[in-house]
Length: 60
Image (tube, rainbow, N blue to C red; front, side):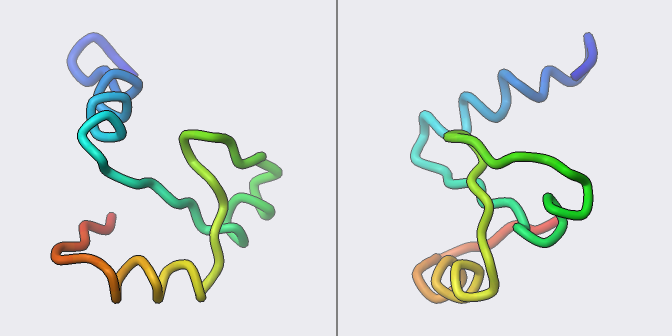
């Protein structure tokens, strides 16, 4: 986050509007990060299900 880009606020707004964030479990493990309520870790099956169930998908 920064003064120009308040990431925490944007994530909060996204989740409140029904958005879902799932982090790559492998990427999190490599970086020794833990998943949480706002950003659970997922695997390839989760990715497949998200894409299959979605009208639009945004990745970056």
